[in-house]
Amino acid sequence: MKKLLLFAVCGLSGIASANAIEPQIYPDFVINWISSGGIWAGSTYYGEMALINLQTGEIVTLGDGSDDNYASPGMGNYISDNGIFVGGADYDGEQANYYKDGQWGVLPTGKEDVYSNFAQGITADGSRICGQVGRTAFSMDANEAMSTPVVWYANSDGGYDAYIELPHPGVDIEGMAPQYVTAVAISDDGKKIVGQVRSNSGRYNLPILYQEQADGTWEYRYLWPFSLDGVELPDAPGEKPDAPYAPDFMDPDIAEQYEALAEEGEYLDPKNCMTEEQYAAWLAAWDEYFILDNAWWEAYAVYVTAMEEYIDVPSFTFNNIMISANGRYVVSTDIDYDEFYAYCNVYICDTENGDSWVAKAAPDLALLATYVGNNGEILASTPSYDTFRMAYICNGINGSFVPLQDYIQPRNSVLYSWMDQNMRHDHPTEDYSTVENGWCIGTVCASADLKMLASWEANAWDDTASSYYYSYLLPMDATTAITSVSVESSAEGPVYNLQGIRMTEPLEALPSGLYITNGKVIKK
Image 1 (cartoon, rainbow, N blue to C red):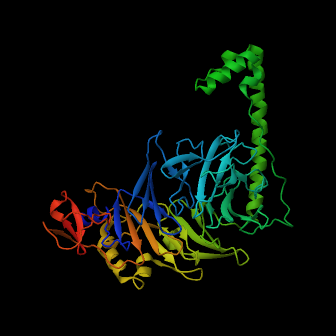
Image 2: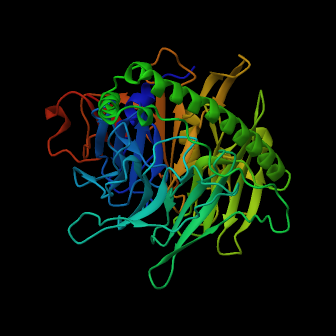
């Protein structure tokens, strides 16, 4: 079992040179996104949010996980290269928020946008933000999409103007109102946005691309081709019948009081708010509703069964959709579950080559796509359904998946050596056996050019450690790596703290702690 001394040291910085970013370890961080240019990284864990400036070592914390201090990132590229964070700052998701220059801002929404307003992705320069607004509370009976896609443009005052609603289908692949229409990730130039249309039943999450035209207007297109032309289907069941609403059967003044109390969380027995005749009418309405509702579900089952015979669409995972920074490639994961296993395929679409899709089949690995680079490189992790994961990379749209460490070894031997020393441990497996000195790479994200990588991993190797998660910064141009700690009381040459800042005083005059000099960590 490896000791955790290196984690404690390198987690603070591990910078041996002010001119280079070197491999680092961050205990208790879950780094899951890097800005397009590799400048900022984001760590999130149950409402605790941290932004890390990879060039200066600065760490900004945004939430502690409590209901009144909660920060959650967007599901897409949620950090810009100038350090703007987008997501939500309240647990209920009633507002779409951004964090800029040390302050929270609220993205403008309409009075009717009262549910699940959320910012999802931001351009590299922070000029545009994509996301969703919701006008309808979550309900399987909703007759319109519960969220619609939008884009916000930055203004000269440093904030953002009222959103532009992106065009989108009002009817899904099943011929009904979709559950959600999302806008998850945005290209660096802000001209392409990807999301999904989640069907009414939740069976299909079709990828959708919104693209700005030369005149500034937006158009959309489904990225996965499908057509039911020439297919005879039974009629769609239409809108579900509405359940009888108790206040509709009460006297107006009593109904008003009943609804006011319900808004405050106090619910009265409707029977005590109605006359005998009103109550009987309400019960009769319920009897009629049950008949209509059962008939609707029967018609729906017939309709869906018929559709499934003709629709050949992968089971794309909800919210698992990414676009490369240059806007060319879109990636998503198809996951089919049975009682014991998840069968996965990663799909990549070339939007500049006829929206052609390629399935990167690796069913034995249960891969979940986590990033796509400008050259079509795909990062993915396995198993898709667990916290303890291994990272893989598909080097280009025509390549195949290989373990990340095998990709790095011929490209940077220094980085590979550091990983070999710090990211291999004895760890258990699902069948309770033990892998000796196995790779623990985790879930990986990257900059657009894949020059800066970062991963997070659940600690499955040392149950005595205080940290349950560790994050790793893996710069592909690493030239040095601190791998040992010297216990000394003096040093020659410049002295740096663990953030890479040169100290103006000699080591003897500095407080007790860890410092860097001559490429070594000095413990004073």
